[in-house]
Length: 155
Image (cartoon, rainbow, N blue to C red; front, side):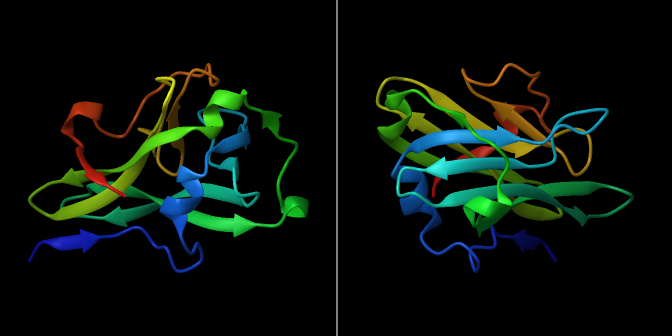
């Protein structure tokens, strides 16, 4: 039977509305080796969103990652890098869904601004890490799967 792996919104009421309110700052953690495991976003509505990765076992040693979301207090967030004003004007937010024979997994999201900027966040090829693609982020983008295999759905 095919499993459905949905985003867990229980700890983040109105996630879509928060992301649509825009972004004012961000931060990541950097382990000694590899990509970050956590991304913090200060939303336009003032909340701070912490994004991480959860891994799910599939058949034959296969795994698929999904994002985790949590609203945190400013005291629990690292120093954040301010973003330019155009990041406040969000045009669209889509979830990125990985579809396989074993599951449909809401794996990541893509946010587009009215000025043409895009932020894409997915689980990375290295387990429990993030692949982040945006003009303000210079590290390599190496998602768990090719970006083209994800279906885009309204968040």
